Length: 147
Image (cartoon, rainbow, N blue to C red; front, side, top):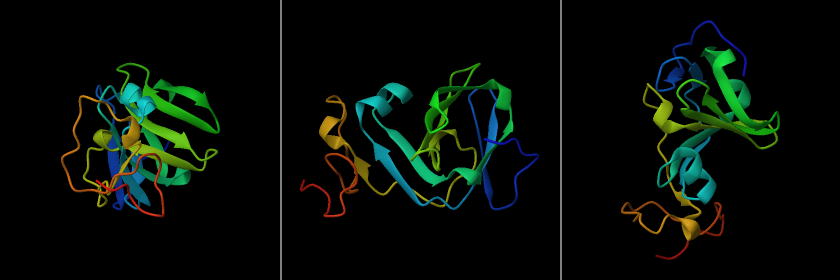
């Protein structure tokens, strides 16, 4: 991600736990969801990853670019702070989109997760208690699984 001087008013601020890495992202996410797959659980250390997707060009690291640690390559990777280890975002879809970890946003986004994916492999110790649609695997345009 490119380093930028500051955010415009339509951007949200995000940062890692220790404050060494900051980013700005447009508040124009295309989708948001909660992913319960084993990879997201391991990456976040939580029952699921709440994230929102947006075009790569709409996210810019504004502080600490040299402190980013990535796992993967230029077509897909997870980005973390090298100092505190905070999981910030994932580069996906052959490098065209980023999935921003919603918990790293300082400002509230206008979007909210609107469904759960990969509930077929969710942590057995976690119960989904909201009324959002649930999908056994990835989003299925035919509809959510029956609950």
